[in-house]
Amino acid sequence: MALFEFSRNSFLRPRERLYELLTLQRAESHAGLDLEAEADGMMDSRMIAGYVRRLAERGYLEESSVGGRPRFTITAAGRRRLQYLLVDFVNELTTVREQARALFRSSLLPLALDKVRRVALYPASETADAVLPALDPLGLELVAVVDDSPQKWGALFHGHRVQPPAALKTLQLDCVLVATAAFQEQIVRKIKELPLRGVRVHVL
Image (cartoon, rainbow, N blue to C red; front, side, top):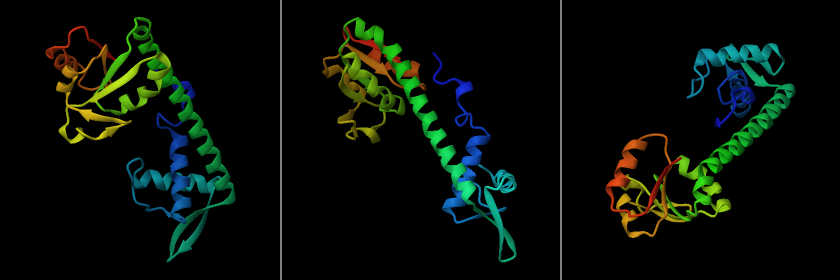
């Protein structure tokens, strides 16, 4: 199952609609934009200038002059367009979240059917954060979160203190869930080097 279907996603590629949304947001939050607007992590200055011109042609931005330089402010039509894009964006994120839950449920269901109950997450990652809502409905109890990074040890992760991997030896577990797309082989190897008798390893 794919995490998301490209045919249903206009923003996450990213594509024109996302850049349009970002440009309108900047115009609104900065009380206007000029054609030499500073680049950010998503758009360089030439891209911003191109979208500013295009949105002005469509009536979403209005050109004026400040200090002899053209400046573009959002129009009423631009605010309506911005609201429309924001609603679409939120709906798309909701769809992706639902698809991610279905993906995790599909991955974890065989464990639940095999009477796995007590699980640990390794590492404390964004994937671990995303998989949490899928655990309880399947009867999987999170009993620990571990991570290799000493900087994370002792920090709270959804009510659990992050512990070093060696802590797995002291816990009564049925399974360790490897919750990352990176370094999976290394993490699985580390888990298998620990004396965890009867504990399964499941890569999400």
